[in-house]
Image (cartoon, rainbow, N blue to C red; front, top):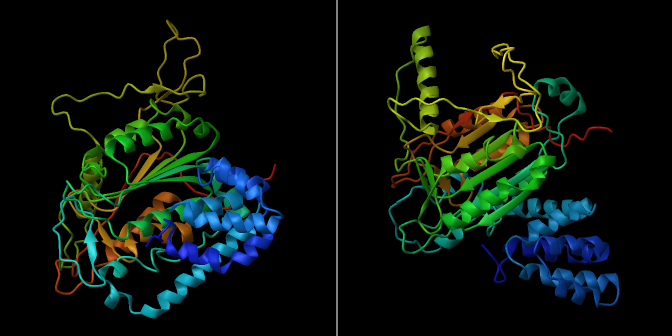
Length: 469
């Protein structure tokens, strides 16, 4: 829940509880410039703060302003603390959130019996009557969501043992991350408010920041605004200086597309195209991660009872091939009778020529210093909350099933597990989960996540590792 001034109530509470410590310890000289850069305060506000006599009074003035500066002010303030080498104050605030979350979570130990409703990320979900007190049930801890799960750091020994066969991922920051979160949709369209979506974007923002990414979160975008934001993000010059990229999309959707708040559809293929080797040369040969929290159809999964599986080789091979074929089919435009060849693109700043053993060359008419050719699309991995044709499930207190599993696994296992293996573990957690809402269509409903990959090396995130100069 947002406070009357826009900042989440829990964040206002944490600032209030730590007000004296912050007022005594904050160093404002660089911090204010960072907050101006992040559009949290204006130059006029900075001048008002600096007009106060003494550092304590100046700090108090800033603390009075922050709760009035919108829902992103708290996370931007924490980021600015980290960027100005005041991490101890950021940790103090994050630990306070954790204590606050744990205190409230203890009031409801029996999670399954207290779940209000899992809901679908469906494109046209049926309305249901609002229950008394439902507004409170739709958020955990007044909008704060699940407690922050610390990211476990990678050890130098693990880095040195695995970096040779992995993507280079040591830049600081590791990369840029963009989170698009749509929750409030136009009343002209039958798209429901995504209760619990605030938990999702907050969890992802915290996760990505503590994995070493510079994160931007945009809220409630129309399709045109989403297109413009993604286009601008893909062309940022800063991509040249970092080793990877993350895009997370949280909205209603259907197979192959996600909705803007205006009810129009943005095709996923258009998003992937913006980051391919032809359109985003700054990210050539660098891993690009996409996470899609949206429906890919209107049917929620149901459980079935199966006989013991056949373990013969032919059945195992057939099942594996079918799953991969379905995954590829969902991402590849079909052209019956008109197969096309990927003509590829020149690698920017690449080797002078390919060293592939299959590369043929002729002494006659040989190009001068030909560059290595790349396929148009490569080095991408995309995690989907649900399978083609099925709905994604979202708990109104704890956020979506997929994002909860994703943030938990990445925080725990990125220290020693590559991304593809972590997404397999996410799949396993999602497979084991089922809805608990007796008397509704969601009781014992199921979901199954999946991922598709064109990665060419192991993708370890190496959290916390800083190479020695």
